[in-house]
Amino acid sequence: MNSDAKIPFLDLVTPHHELEEDLVAVFRQALKTAGFIGGPMVQGFEEDFAGFCGTRHCVGVGSGTDALRFALLAAGVGSGDTVLTVPNTFIATTEAVSQAGAVFDFVDIDESTYNMSPEQLREYLETKCDTDPRTGIPVSRRTGRPVKAVVPVHLYGQTADMDAILDVADRFRLIVVEDACQAHGAEYFSRKRNAWCRAGSMGAAAAFSFYPGKNLGACGEAGAVTTDDDGIAAKIRMIRDHGQARKYHHDVEGYNGRLDAIQAGILRVKLRSVDRGNGMRREIAARYNRLLSASNGLIAPIEPSWSRAVYHLYVVRTRFRDDVLKYLSENGIVCGLHYPVPLHLQKAYAGIGYREGDFPVSEKVAKEILSLPMYPTLQAEQQARVIDGIKTFFSDH
Image 1 (cartoon, rainbow, N blue to C red):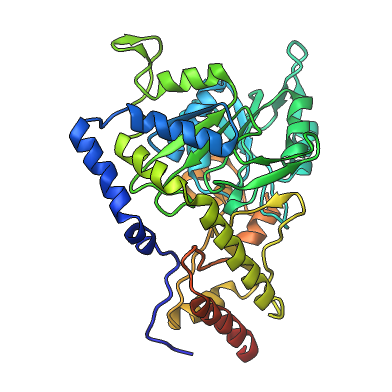
Image 2: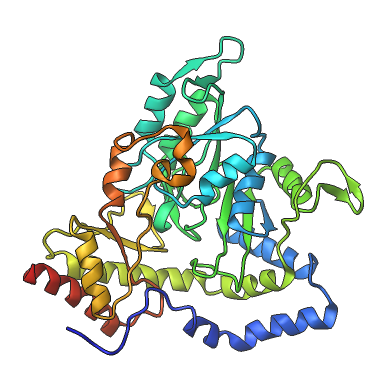
């Protein structure tokens, strides 16, 4: 099935061609006003994105990693604390915890959604912690530190089961900070609220990345924190700007983590079409689901009834992952792996003492996951080639 026309994993060229005049206008405006840091473009984007997520506040920052680090710091997480998250995520999740001064520990994922398992979270707190008799807060036996917060990751554009996670967090008095870096516009039906809630609106705060390949991507690095908490928002505004309450008056030692005005202006332009792009992603995902249903040995993504995923990535599973990846690559179809090595087995974390077998679901999934081409401009003919390639592989092998 060889073809000369390569199908890319991601198309970042076409959308920017379509928006070129509007994006160039942002740059011209910055040149005319010299408004490069802060100002109306940043404030305008923050207001628009808060409205998009259904929160009171949005604070623009330099990257998604900044967003999660600053959210944790502003929520009161720091030295001496433990933060629970999952091993099936990008390393920025745990980097942010470490850089906030805390230590992280892991709970395994749900095999159907690839997101944090509420049952594993509850089990960790019930069986791997002792309760501090003075504070009533769980203390991890593994880290020797109190568990202060939990970071569920809305992976691949699908929300974690937030009602269940928030119930556990409330019971054990934990702060919940959402890692929504892959979930712009994803929705979760909260049984408690009897309403659909957008990613970024359910925890104490949430972190978003606007890395170029995201559903809402900048033309460079950018991120944001969303929250309904006035205090958290105010702290992040200081933290991102060297701890300044006002110019040259530093209430705390902070960071240089501001959102560039040009990136904010670009994001504000692109935000107008995110819902449309997410709808196109959902249509492409539905076509994948329908046409791949007969492929033996391949598991398509599962979308629970309480989820409206936005398919930042379309991730399938197969025991023959490496062979399928090689076959598709040889036939001009570029795929990705998100993520091939769980965090607890990464060389960077060799010193924390985890071994293979400690998180069996994450480890099993990491060996089987394959990200197929997924972007709003993916053409039906291109998608048909991807599907035909997969079906041909399984029929021939």
